[in-house]
Length: 462
Ligand SMILES: *Cc1c(COP(=O)(O)O)cnc(C)c1O
Image (cartoon, rainbow, N blue to C red):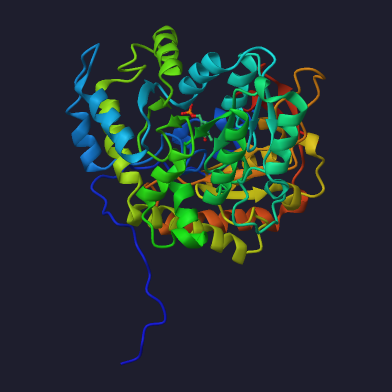
């Protein structure tokens, strides 16, 4: 008997229900994207065939999660589902106190208000849009302390999310530990392309900040995906389960903000977790102002139940292998076609290097923004800009921030699309690549004050 050369993997689930999609013509899509001001956030989802705008809140829930929705205890106070969620957070993450919030940014707001004073400095491994804005609104200033490799789309460093300890030390020296309430460590780093942080680095960050009495707050939005990379690429963890790696990551931190809409496989939800009793007391008081009572924080009971079940499903090894396996498959197809993408391939999507894809456009002609529009027009695939538009403006000078990375993000929802969809995506991007020299830039014709990438409008340069 001849031996098989390779054995394919497949998803550890089967499909019980499907959602039918509208198919559109190129002409319809050209009109739709023009009407949307060349901003994929302003498209109607019914005009989209494959939606890679985000992996946030777009996962397919399991039958167990849907069954959990039916067990919603919609009491105003002390819902049974809160205690189920609290138990899951203790079991899988190990944090002492839990405050549910409507989603991640609700937790960021509360954390920032409780911990940051005017004039404080918050170091972090690359900014995230909502996280940095809440830090700024609370009177703080974000300082980037990620390693230089994170800003280089071609660097093959396996842990491009790592904190640069020298940069962090310099920040502590320059401003003094008293002005630094905490460092915000994100796992994985979204804006660097879903790049992970190593356990070694987390331990070093803990040791350095511990010496100065600085707390470590985790942005644990994609922690299970980060754990997968640790398992794959950090020797001592090769035989450890995702669940045990996740818990160890949390053990080097004092608390966390969490968007349940990513890892935890729900459509809405998040939380703030804290170990410190006093910080918790203040936060659980403040959450009443912005979100809801501290035992629901803006969520229905059923949402808390679904999130508790999702947390458990998210740390299963076979789930994560299939989840990241699908992202790797798409990345492999794109690399095979010669498309410039961020390497190594990250956890939640493929990031196209728009500067390299469209080298004839200047950064203030919004290369990633126009590339996202072109990809939509080609086959109805919705992606998003992560470059100069997302970076916003410097509040002091009023000029654009010019980030080194000018990317188009193809984010893969969890458990939603098939391998055939991945092939269609790779072929569509390839077709845009073949006519890249004819693509012109954009000018911005409407710019909102906050998080402009959501609602800005553009027109084509002639
Ligand atoms: C999505 C996200 C958040 C914010 O969470 P929301 O649920 O969207 O409010 C924070 N940090 C990172 C890294 C994220 O990806």
